[in-house]
Length: 209
Image (cartoon, rainbow, N blue to C red; front, side, top):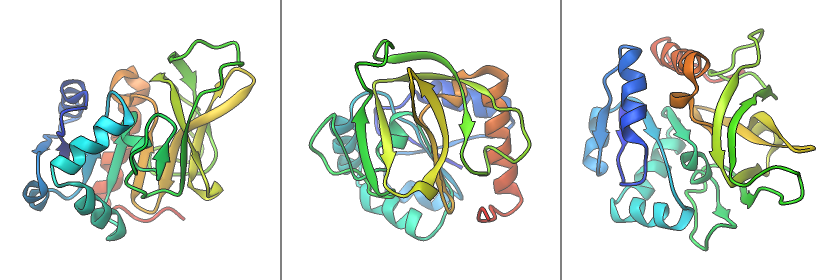
């Protein structure tokens, strides 16, 4: 299992959270490191354009696209979710384009502070490996000013309330998924979600029905 280190991720907390679950993460700095991985985690903290530039400089953009198209497991976290989309209002760079859609700034008129910081309850939109059917809707921790707007409704796995509206909290397609929130900072609820992902990998990473 590889943790993509491109200089813009909260690697320490992600690595520590997986260590608590008994999983060692391999640092991925360049395409050659992917050979040691059966699944990938794409974290992210910061802004869209600098993050994409870092990924390009690392030579990882096309290998990540290939990884997704080959239906190998990939989990994005926070900015890592946004990078999976085609573009963002935060900048001008092309995203990875693994999901169709655009990243937009959260609306200013929703009586919420931006960045949106704090706990929110997930509202599942479809079952996925992190959110099995029948589980209590967890409260998780968010820090973000932008949210993805998937073009395909089937890619939306969960939302969270933002003012009078809802924002994308999770997306999922085949074996690629992502969380806008920080599971590694979401206490027991976040650990449970990551445990579900690890168990899904161990069982053969079956495609969601």
